[in-house]
Length: 119
Figure 1 (tube, rainbow, N blue to C red):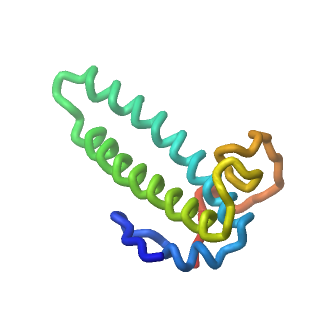
Figure 2: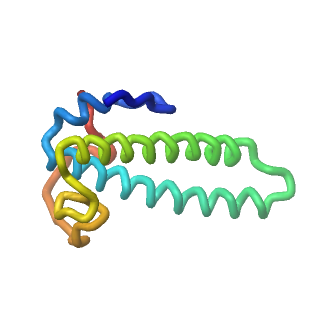
């Protein structure tokens, strides 16, 4: 399956297909959480930019950079979902992060947040 991403990604679709289902679904969940926070930040930045008479160049730059990150992460989720599809995992299955019940997991993981998948 040929796929050309719009944004530079840390892995290709072929590499994603080679990952274990658990790794893929965990990365999708991590990216979805990151997107949630980025979108909340965008709402705050947009509000701050509207309130100011003269837009702050730093806030404008942060908003624009976040838009690129959001696009890249959404594309990465799409690639990972395509990898799940190639593995025979269909939307609505227990392995689909969108349909899996939301539970909170508490771990003693001391690694830095935002590490992601690196190949």
